[in-house]
Length: 337
Image (cartoon, rainbow, N blue to C red; front, top):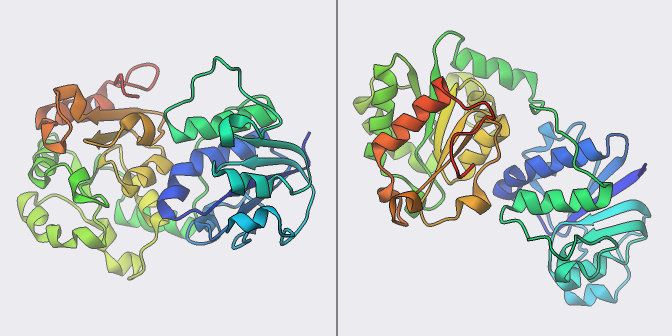
């Protein structure tokens, strides 16, 4: 059994960190007793805004290590030399891999340069997965021999869980809606989110809009169009002014189901592992959709297009109903899952 495991990546900003959370959790499941060290060339959000949920997952951070900062690092002395039982290189830039491979190790696993620098390699017939999490899972499988089942649920700080329950008390069926995205071409039209919210209200459910700083201008319009809707992210009496993705994850755990565009918020919902429907236009669902136990994606391609406007309202309403009422036995309902 490996005593120490190092993971190497260039950096993680908030989107990367949320996207990679399933990998972090499967890594710990594969090495339950090992000391796991996360090494990054630059900074990692795991040692920053997401550190509160890293307890029990990552034991040590070596951020801003400078390893892989320039090609010259292949020849210069490493900033530190520490022997690891296993090193898993998650990035694929060749000279960064060559640099990290100089770190003392018993086993080195990397997909860089077609696995040519890796001590273990996948079968030649294996097709490279589309989804990044599946590619990272392959690295764990090569290193550990298998990817064990991951226990459900992240450990959130207790105060966040309590505040989320105060904001969304037990009783109602809450349906989350996240109409924003980092780029507006990834946003389903706002009036269609309104139509879905109204359909939830008609069913006696409570629509809950999750709005980030860039979507605050939509709040008056949404509040007027859907009077029963809630906007808990904007309740400063509960949360104060500071934004944290952990707050969104805590709130999402109060939802019976949720809808989001391909966005950072969709991965916050994914981290909460709630029944989730993610909408995709020009971006590929096979690569970017959040991993959840129940849920899937609706893509514009299903309707012969590439734009978010090609996704019809009625289909979204029906699939939300299916999430809430008739999930299939295997926890999926769409061919895109």
